[in-house]
Image 1: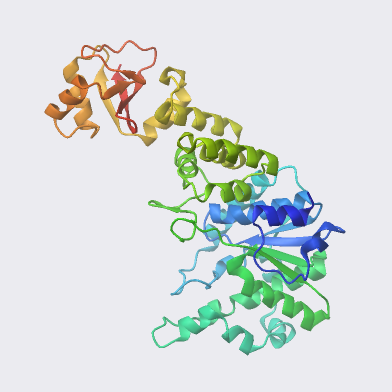
Image 2 (image 1 turned 90 degrees about the vertical axis):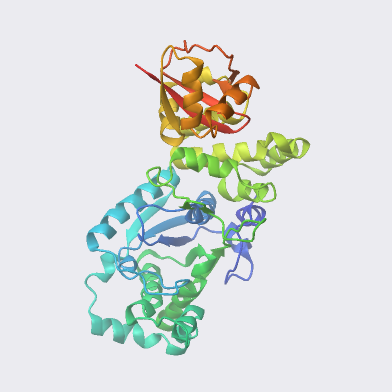
Length: 415
């Protein structure tokens, strides 16, 4: 499969200035993709674009990965209804290092170079910049942007000169990389199309040269039509300190049936034959959720490593499948203790201790209801139906307690 064919199959095509993307199957080109350090982690929205970038790399093209130390001091106003709060230089520096570390993790083994646009903006003379660059950027072009019109409308919040100038700064990035690194293509998310086109226009006006833009579509939830990557708790981050590996894995495990095939193509490196095989299995037994299980495992492995993916796979099979809970190691139990409600009970606990724990864990609303659940066989410990006279004799000091199919918690034995 050629690069252009793979981009089409994976759904990595939105808008491009190329007349025919088959040009990408030819001689290697140098392209760039950038992320502003507005946070100390990328999100899965960034990951969708990163997977397209990785396809370009594997297709033989050289990547320049930009971290926006300069643009991050302003913040992209596109899509924002009000002014951003400015971040301190120290916070931006911290965020830059975190983004670079994620670049190195996701693109490990590929050919790329990391650059920071602060390096070429920090010494720019303001008057020189206005004369040499600003003179070549038409105001009509900048004023016509949708977000500018919205912010300047009667009910808009207005826009500062700093945020208004963001597009000019990003356009200069493209010009600088064109002249300094031989970059002829910017790849971006669909929401960056306007900023990227400004760079193409600036290169043409300043040098007479040709440059291009290639954008990936924003991923949407096909069931709701909403932008993909949000949960009830907010954005899904690639940093495990912001979105735990447990929540990360569970997010992908709960992707809706309608979207799962496209997400397998966008967010994993599985080839067409494997994806087709997974979807065939899924079609025969949707209740088995093989497509979601494969998606969760592959994306977690890519972002957090194979060890984390294996642990989360085991945890999911114990909590929601048929795996024996005694297979959980101490590391998996540590994860579950952080993620699930936990109650402490005596080692030689009595039925009354379990009753109290069920209420404390909100698995029952009262002691009477807890006893009824136990008598009715609705309570499981380590995936075994709990007898009425249960004694905890496990080797670990923790056990998984469950009511029904999916209401899980942790019992921690008092040492």
